[in-house]
Image (cartoon, rainbow over all chains, first blue to last red):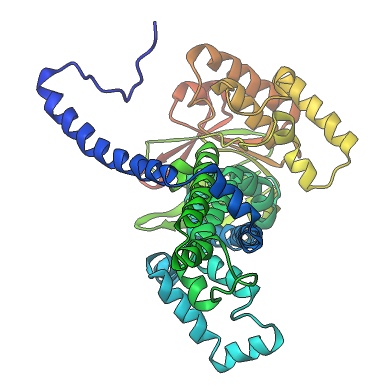
Length: 273
Length: 216
């Protein structure tokens, strides 16, 4: 006989039926709306539209740039998020709450404000000094920096909750066995956090893929130079080529769904999403 | 030997003061007391996992009060066992030896030696997920004993095992003691464990430790 899950509810009580109907109705309407949006998009495009976007040199460039910049952003985000997540989950220090709030700023700020702030930062004397050595604004590095500023904040959150879920006692045992702090991190904590690292990288990749506002302000929308897929949607819409914009959007939707499936399989659903 | 003198440990509002006791080398000490009285806190302070405000801890005639946990040469089995999630049993046992840069041949030899002592040869290729309470406890003992520590600290080692396995664990702890002669400090609630294993019984009462010689 199939064993009933501990969390399963007893649906048989008649007095509870209106409650369940309420839950299903509210949830159902929202889910219907999400699926409806995607289905509407698919009815607005044809196979020929997809062929056309892949035939376009500019859109092929945008696809390549998006794949490259999102992958680099994801790697950079992991590189930064792992130590910050570990620090925030394992140590108490003065100013921790303030640092915690600062780390959340990119999540709560409107994306356009991040783009504007980046633009202003590189107009300061310090920013100009960096630009004189390594040009950033309106060039490829600006795309990566704009994506990184937002995506990394999400990766930090995932890494922090990952380390919080790993029993600290394992690292303490490693210390008593002769390991240094660094060895207990590399040999015990980080391998235990591997699913979280993959989830953080995947979430950062997905966030970077959807980033538009900061890139528009900080990198511009120059074809064959700083055009990523959200920029393509914007440029195609502004020239009235709605079919191409929808086809590119659907491509991004597919990528987003794949990412969600990957994150769920890494356990990211429990961690943060 | 373990020598704890006038120890003061503070954790938030919880304070332990003037904790003193002494366990001679190669003896088996059992520390008993009510839940929440601070037994685990004292054990963790001995292991170097909690800061000591005042007093001193000497292990094997060496003052370790200000030494890091990694330099105390102890074997520690926590109450929740805390096996390393991603490592096979053989790697858990070999962990302290890899840290000490033993050769691969020596590590392999030591792993098999301990696996035989603990009766866990059949578990060496397994990961901790799916091990029973008794099996996990044996692996944790192997991990703690690998580098031949001066002191073995056991926090409620029989807490997570059933009655049938308990007798096996008694025999195992007696065998370990006989073969390794390691000075052992064992925390428990159970007077049965204390009577069966201890050379000295330390009773934690009202923040003080009283020592009794075992009747056995």
